[in-house]
Image (cartoon, rainbow, N blue to C red):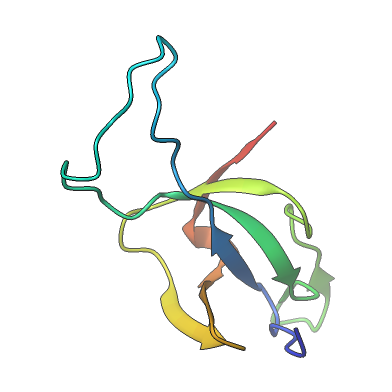
Amino acid sequence: MNIRPLQDRIIVERVEEETTTAGGIIIPDTVSKEKPQEGKVVAAGKGKVTPEGKVLPLDVKEGDRVLFGKYAGSEIKIDGKEYLIMREDDILGVVE
């Protein structure tokens, strides 16, 4: 990917939910599925710039699995793949 997000923005690739439950029950495709709210950070900016000109580094980095809100970010398409670009404030948490 040849794109670098600016300031406190990150690019996230959605992670598809599993179609089998922990108990082994297979969820059919006919069940209406919502877009996953979990993804993998594929690119991150340098950090937020304060009014004094100091750069505050981001808490997330490339490779982190993150949770985000249902309507967070903007959908973009790069090289035929769909991604979300959002601010670090849109991230709810990091999956460890």
